[in-house]
Length: 208
Image (cartoon, rainbow, N blue to C red; front, top):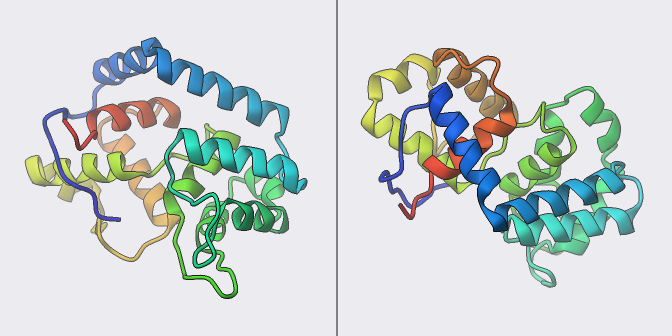
């Protein structure tokens, strides 16, 4: 979970900054159609018991959100493996109860004869698209944002991070707790995870 660091687009979170990031995302034509397509797909197939329907969601999300699960691979888990395991995880009940451990289950389920692979970014995005109110997203942009925050504003990072190690061995409950502390520290408790996702995606872009 180590990202290439670039802090040119970094800014501390604020209501004004988050609103601006949301407007930027919503005005981008490519982002707009991707969001609309996924919103329609996940609304059409909200459950996770039918493998064919799950496959559609896995393939679309993997491709449009660049989560890097191979379409076909013999030596590592591919989209067919992931889509095949999801119906066995009882996701629908887990999402109803806002289970945090279910994200770990999606990301760490392993497959006989294939390399161990953690699909953490994919798992957070898959959970988020089912419950955007309950599951914040982790990816390389979020990693980079917090890396820059720690570098540029170490006192703030130390005040809310609770000792969280960006390169440590942690799971979704630990990341979720970090996001709650982050939101609270900057007095943004009423800001949705979805709006925070947009802000972190834009301001954590390592290519900036």
